[in-house]
Image 1: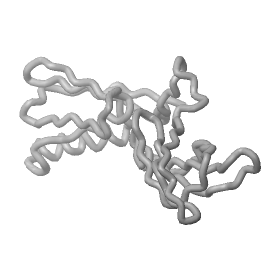
Image 2: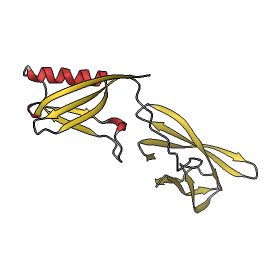
Image 3: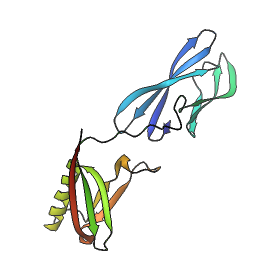
Image 4: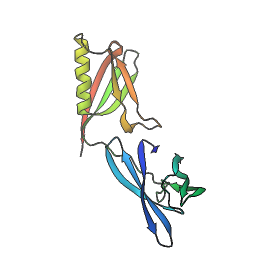
Length: 174
């Protein structure tokens, strides 16, 4: 199951005496290629063949078969349980050598990007190569997570003959 670019795995059922069953929730972050244990769900029934879905930050576990009996109920678990809605988690902030790349278009429009120096240098290499007559007509600048929205990816494409000038303002974050 996926939610906000995370992939969730449910499993690892444990019997809790007098409390029902516990199922572990693990989250995989494809951007950082890492797993974390999100929390545990307390379930009424032992479930091994259920169907689950995420809707509005809630996991719904639907049906199952246990001891040749059909389980027809739905259990809900919030992925936001224990999180303070007034203080949402901030996205991880970038570190290292960075720059604000300001691209001024021939129309006078200025496009500003907060990028790593590696990304800025790749852009400059594209620009110089395209000026020399090689390379693609457009260049995609990744807007990363520093731009809010419900998007899985945001890229801004610039075209060489539409660029009037660009400016690089370097800085460092430790």
